[in-house]
Length: 151
Image (cartoon, rainbow, N blue to C red; front, side, top):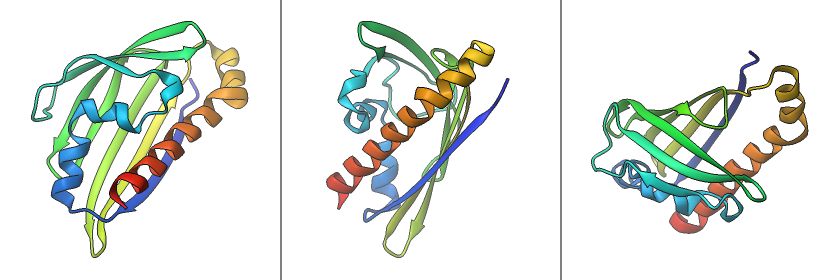
Protein backbone atom coordinates (compact mmCIF):
# COMPACT_ATOMS: atom_id res chain seq x y z
CA UNK A 1 0.00 0.00 0.00
CA UNK A 2 1.48 3.32 -1.09
CA UNK A 3 0.80 6.19 1.33
CA UNK A 4 0.47 9.66 -0.21
CA UNK A 5 0.66 12.91 1.74
CA UNK A 6 -1.01 16.25 1.13
CA UNK A 7 -0.07 19.24 3.30
CA UNK A 8 -1.47 22.73 3.34
CA UNK A 9 -1.43 25.72 5.64
CA UNK A 10 -3.33 28.98 5.69
CA UNK A 11 -3.42 31.92 8.04
CA UNK A 12 -6.81 33.55 8.53
CA UNK A 13 -7.42 36.82 10.43
CA UNK A 14 -9.73 35.45 13.13
CA UNK A 15 -9.10 34.37 16.69
CA UNK A 16 -8.12 30.84 17.55
CA UNK A 17 -11.40 30.51 19.45
CA UNK A 18 -13.46 31.53 16.39
CA UNK A 19 -11.44 29.28 14.07
CA UNK A 20 -12.03 26.33 16.40
CA UNK A 21 -15.75 27.08 16.61
CA UNK A 22 -16.00 26.99 12.81
CA UNK A 23 -13.85 23.89 12.15
CA UNK A 24 -15.18 21.82 15.03
CA UNK A 25 -18.71 21.77 13.56
CA UNK A 26 -19.03 19.05 10.89
CA UNK A 27 -21.92 20.91 9.23
CA UNK A 28 -19.47 23.66 8.17
CA UNK A 29 -17.67 21.17 5.92
CA UNK A 30 -20.34 21.64 3.28
CA UNK A 31 -19.49 25.34 3.01
CA UNK A 32 -15.80 24.68 2.27
CA UNK A 33 -16.28 21.68 -0.06
CA UNK A 34 -16.57 22.19 -3.83
CA UNK A 35 -20.19 22.03 -5.05
CA UNK A 36 -19.40 19.36 -7.67
CA UNK A 37 -18.90 16.81 -4.86
CA UNK A 38 -22.48 17.42 -3.65
CA UNK A 39 -21.21 16.78 -0.13
CA UNK A 40 -23.97 15.85 2.34
CA UNK A 41 -23.61 15.01 6.01
CA UNK A 42 -26.01 12.21 6.89
CA UNK A 43 -25.25 11.82 10.62
CA UNK A 44 -22.95 12.86 13.45
CA UNK A 45 -23.47 16.56 14.07
CA UNK A 46 -23.55 16.71 17.89
CA UNK A 47 -21.65 19.50 19.59
CA UNK A 48 -19.07 19.85 20.91
CA UNK A 49 -16.72 17.77 18.77
CA UNK A 50 -15.39 14.83 20.76
CA UNK A 51 -13.14 11.79 20.54
CA UNK A 52 -14.98 8.85 19.05
CA UNK A 53 -17.57 10.96 17.22
CA UNK A 54 -18.69 9.19 14.03
CA UNK A 55 -19.65 11.39 11.10
CA UNK A 56 -21.17 9.98 7.91
CA UNK A 57 -21.33 11.72 4.54
CA UNK A 58 -22.47 11.12 1.01
CA UNK A 59 -20.21 12.46 -1.73
CA UNK A 60 -20.40 12.30 -5.49
CA UNK A 61 -17.13 10.74 -6.63
CA UNK A 62 -18.05 10.78 -10.34
CA UNK A 63 -21.14 11.61 -12.40
CA UNK A 64 -24.02 9.49 -11.09
CA UNK A 65 -21.72 7.67 -8.62
CA UNK A 66 -22.22 8.33 -4.90
CA UNK A 67 -20.11 7.02 -2.05
CA UNK A 68 -20.84 6.83 1.66
CA UNK A 69 -17.91 8.01 3.74
CA UNK A 70 -17.68 7.25 7.46
CA UNK A 71 -15.07 9.03 9.58
CA UNK A 72 -14.18 8.93 13.23
CA UNK A 73 -13.04 12.08 15.04
CA UNK A 74 -9.98 11.38 17.19
CA UNK A 75 -7.18 13.12 19.10
CA UNK A 76 -9.31 16.15 19.92
CA UNK A 77 -7.39 18.82 21.79
CA UNK A 78 -9.66 21.90 21.82
CA UNK A 79 -8.25 24.90 19.96
CA UNK A 80 -5.17 22.85 19.05
CA UNK A 81 -5.96 19.84 16.85
CA UNK A 82 -8.22 16.99 15.81
CA UNK A 83 -7.99 14.06 13.42
CA UNK A 84 -10.62 12.68 11.10
CA UNK A 85 -9.90 9.10 10.17
CA UNK A 86 -11.85 7.11 7.60
CA UNK A 87 -13.66 4.01 8.84
CA UNK A 88 -15.18 3.24 5.43
CA UNK A 89 -15.27 5.12 2.18
CA UNK A 90 -13.48 5.80 -1.07
CA UNK A 91 -9.93 5.43 0.27
CA UNK A 92 -8.08 2.39 1.53
CA UNK A 93 -6.61 4.66 4.21
CA UNK A 94 -7.36 8.27 5.23
CA UNK A 95 -5.87 10.14 8.22
CA UNK A 96 -6.38 13.93 8.25
CA UNK A 97 -4.68 15.94 11.01
CA UNK A 98 -6.08 19.46 11.49
CA UNK A 99 -3.86 21.78 13.56
CA UNK A 100 -4.58 25.31 14.81
CA UNK A 101 -2.07 27.83 16.09
CA UNK A 102 -2.59 31.39 17.29
CA UNK A 103 -0.49 34.01 15.48
CA UNK A 104 -0.08 37.78 15.65
CA UNK A 105 -2.40 38.07 12.63
CA UNK A 106 -5.02 35.48 13.61
CA UNK A 107 -4.88 31.70 13.31
CA UNK A 108 -2.63 29.39 11.32
CA UNK A 109 -4.53 26.34 10.09
CA UNK A 110 -2.43 23.35 9.05
CA UNK A 111 -3.65 20.21 7.36
CA UNK A 112 -1.74 16.99 6.86
CA UNK A 113 -3.55 14.21 5.04
CA UNK A 114 -2.02 10.76 4.70
CA UNK A 115 -4.03 8.57 2.36
CA UNK A 116 -3.87 5.46 0.21
CA UNK A 117 -6.07 4.23 -2.60
CA UNK A 118 -7.51 0.77 -3.08
CA UNK A 119 -6.97 -1.44 -6.16
CA UNK A 120 -3.16 -1.73 -6.12
CA UNK A 121 -1.53 -0.58 -9.37
CA UNK A 122 -4.89 0.65 -10.70
CA UNK A 123 -5.20 2.87 -7.63
CA UNK A 124 -1.69 4.21 -8.29
CA UNK A 125 -2.67 5.03 -11.88
CA UNK A 126 -5.90 6.69 -10.70
CA UNK A 127 -3.87 8.72 -8.21
CA UNK A 128 -1.54 9.99 -10.92
CA UNK A 129 -4.29 10.71 -13.44
CA UNK A 130 -7.06 12.06 -11.21
CA UNK A 131 -7.05 11.75 -7.41
CA UNK A 132 -3.94 13.81 -6.62
CA UNK A 133 -5.18 16.73 -8.73
CA UNK A 134 -8.74 16.42 -7.40
CA UNK A 135 -7.57 16.56 -3.78
CA UNK A 136 -5.44 19.62 -4.55
CA UNK A 137 -8.48 21.26 -6.19
CA UNK A 138 -10.61 20.48 -3.11
CA UNK A 139 -8.07 21.97 -0.71
CA UNK A 140 -7.45 25.01 -2.97
CA UNK A 141 -11.23 25.59 -3.07
CA UNK A 142 -11.30 25.42 0.70
CA UNK A 143 -8.46 27.94 0.93
CA UNK A 144 -10.31 30.32 -1.41
CA UNK A 145 -13.60 30.07 0.52
CA UNK A 146 -11.87 30.61 3.87
CA UNK A 147 -10.12 33.71 2.49
CA UNK A 148 -13.41 35.07 1.20
CA UNK A 149 -15.31 34.26 4.39
CA UNK A 150 -12.74 35.45 6.93
CA UNK A 151 -10.72 38.00 4.94
